Amino acid sequence: MGLLSIIRKIKRKEKEMRILTVGLDNSGKTTIVLKINGEDTSVISPTLGFNIKTITYNKYTLNIWDIGGQRTIRSYWRNYFEQTDGLVWVVDSSDLRRLDDCKMELDNLLKEEFLNELIVGIFATSGHYCSFCFGFLQRLSGASLLILANKQDIQGALTAAEIAKVLNLEAMDKTRHWKIVGCSAYTGEGLLEGLDWLVQDIASRIYVLD
Ligand SMILES: Nc1nc2c(ncn2[C@@H]2O[C@H](COP(=O)(O)OP(=O)(O)OP(=O)(O)O)[C@@H](O)[C@H]2O)c(=O)[nH]1
Ligand SMILES: [Mg+2]
Image 1 (cartoon, rainbow, N blue to C red):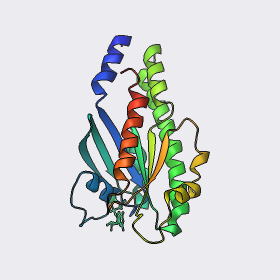
Image 2: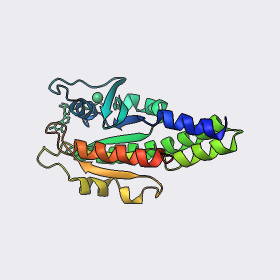
Image 3: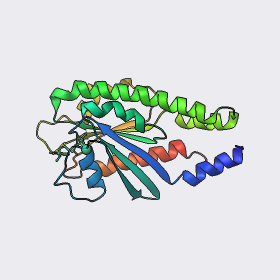
């Protein structure tokens, strides 16, 4: 594949973003995605596989994958990493007992996601110096990471700053683009602020050729 066709390929796809929503079970992933999409959030059940929503946001088409977070199905998360532009990690800020578990799962996820992107990038582009460089540069920092400190409407919930401390986000790999936002899927507070940052960050990171 020549340089021009690579650029064309990138430009054709630039309006689409693949976003993965993950986090422990009961953290509010499905409720958040429904709320963002303007759907009824009153009847929700645990996600046993995944749901996909396609949402038009500004000039972008977002393919949002909402993956079930129960312990027994967490090992399947890695199956969804390929070509992911944005990761949304949802935390139940009121579930203090499970914050250690939450931190451990996030650390594991980031390690796996980074390796996966790197391996895919190398195999998909092997033999082509230019495309290797593009793939490598695009993926170097891994997906943009938005952490949603959900359920801020519950009394006693930790703030976004407190969650950031517990998850030790400042110690994260410096190449990773991340942001934490406090939100409530019930009131809608914080959701658009988070989504806005994510979409802008992906756009500036991936579509550098625009
Ligand atoms: N108070 C409050 N409850 C919430 C909020 N978001 C979600 N919930 C509730 O938390 C529970 C779990 O929400 P889900 O959206 O199913 O959580 P999930 O992360 O998709 O769970 P899994 O699919 O099992 O991984 C439901 O009873 C929701 O109504 C929130 O912002 N505030
Ligand atoms: Mg769910």
